[in-house]
Every structure is written in C-alpha cells, then in structure tokens.
Length: 125
Image (cartoon, rainbow, N blue to C red; front, side, top):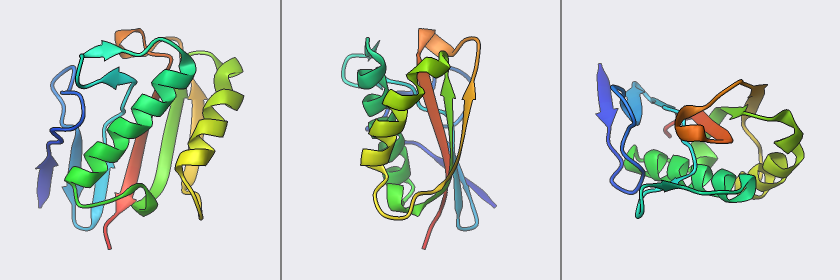
C-alpha cells in the first residue's frame, strides 16, 4: 500500500507528481531543486541552490516521519559537472556520520533552470 507524502514546508510539485511516496518502510522522494518555498523563486548560485534543495529534501522527509539520517540512497543531478566539488562539500556538511549511497549525474537541463536537483530513498525505522 502506498501513501502520498505532502510537505507544506517544501515547494509544491511543478507537475503531476507527488513530493514523495511511502511504501512499507521506504520513502521515495521526488527530486528537489533550490526553490525557496516562501518566495517561489529559484535561488541564484550553485551554493544557494544546493543548500535550498537539501532543505527542501529534509522538509519532505520530515513530512514522511524521516530525517536525513534515514536516507539510504541519494541521487544528485548537476547541469554542469564542474560544480561537483562545491555541491559535494555542501552535501558532506549536510549528511553527517554514515553517508548514504549516492550517484551523481550530469544532465543537459533541469526543471525551472535549476543547476542541481537531489532525490533520495529513506528507510523509516
């Protein structure tokens, strides 16, 4: 049985998808970009977008009863792989302790002109 997760502290979905779906003890998030939910605007720099995307991801996880510590797999999408070191440093500050498995992929374009998008799978305890 699946449960739709709606996070009031994160930006609304930009299309016909859920912010996250829970099935069993697993929570699958949709990709989060650096939109500030209070303004609806995309942050400008890669640093700002990465931090905001991680904040948005955390808000979705919290709405599902999880935290970043429950993430078992993350996927990072970058528009420009030359931003990897910057994103990696911020990601490393955010995920403390044992890091989840992760993939990082360069893509040609992201929604709303974003520079980074981050999705995750979490296991609820």
